[in-house]
Structures are given as structure tokens and as C-alpha cells.
Image (cartoon, rainbow, N blue to C red; front, side, top):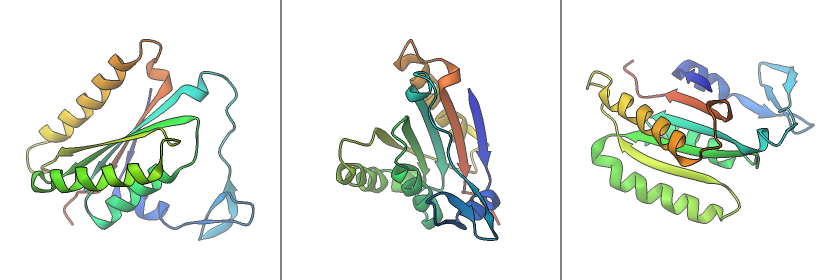
Length: 160
């Protein structure tokens, strides 16, 4: 299992990524440092899952992050996105992401779940979302191990 935490500053830096001439991603501030994703080398890597938890997913930056995750054409990874939004926006965001997934077609193996989030609850809703994600994936497939699932937290909802 790999666990990644992205803060707002890391996310804003990643939005500066621009495509280079060879199709790889390169940082705008240093165009000579391009990276290409590693090719899948075993059958286990083709079954990888990435669970992305995005706080503030109904805001502009949050939606852009979720769209970026969903538009990743890496067919070797199943993306499960958990969007944490204010409880008053759960219904609207669920409808929005359902329509986005319906337009993407069945070729992309992605799921989006919308859950209520309140950053003033002492971390309870964030903990609930993390536990839900972990329990779902530990019960889904017996052959999945923690080594085949990456957990990414994009923490956008924060006080400035």
C-alpha cells in the first residue's frame, strides 16, 4: 500500500504542468526535466487501483483535480475517486459526477463517490471517508493486496 498526501501548494504546483513535445509532462519552470510514466512490467501492475480522496471537490481547483484524475488514460489503473463536499452539495455533486462518468463511456474504469465533509468536525468526516475507502477495497477482491492499491489524499479544503 502506498499513501500520498497532497497539500494545496503541491496541487497548485502540479497544475503548472504542461505537455512537452514528446507527450510527457514537464514542469513549466524547468522544461528540460520531463518524466514519462513507467511501463507495466507484470500482471500484478495491470491490476493496480488508485483511490483518490479529494476534499473541496466542489470548488474550482477540486473539480479540476478530479477531472484530471478521470481523464488519465492509463488503462492499467482503476481509479476510485471520493469527493468530499459540504453536505448541502452532496446531491448536486453526485448528479454532476454521474453525468461526467456517463459521457466518458464504459472504457474508463473509474468510479466517483460523493460524501459529506465538514472540516470543522475535528476530522471525523475525513476519517470516515478514509475508513470507507479502505474497507471497500479490502473487501472487494480477495486477490487484491495492499500492495496493489495506492491511496492519494488531495486536501484542498483548508483555511487561508
